[in-house]
Length: 239
Image (cartoon, rainbow, N blue to C red; front, side, top):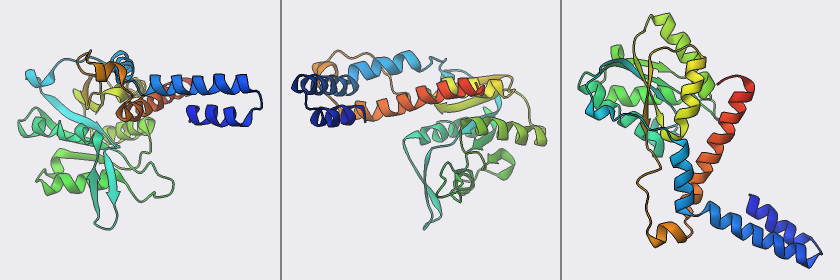
């Protein structure tokens, strides 16, 4: 959008020198935002570093899994899992090996156009299809954002008398805002469990350092959205 606006303005202005500067600026922004190394470093500074839970044996009362993990297929009445579904799948072995007692999923419909697409209901349907019993599930399906994830799930868990140590499970880039919101909502003994981490080992290969990448632009979109979300939540007192 920034590049598009700059280029559009460069064609609208009648001052040739200004048009040239606008186009150069647009190209620089496009290159920086599509540079894999730069984008990777931005994620590295933002995404938290947590212990490797897979190498531990700590047991938890439950894992609170945040929604936004797929798209609802209304014709087939099922959820089509997406990139962030790592949040759910990484935690399933913890249930099967007895390290968590309950899977607590929180997520409704974030769409104004399709309020009936309540993600939690379809995730519950999927989990039951792989033989996870109702007694091991707590599903919250009315929340529309991270703040409501925290508040609505807290009310539900309190009403059921569920307490203890919990894992908070979400994407690595989303964890800073999520932890801040959940702690502000009154959760105690909450341990972050990050999934689908974007930043990896630093690479210094020519393609990673120099060549523009559409994947980098795609990833940066999520990060900028998260930065803005964190700022707005801070201003509104949610985090």
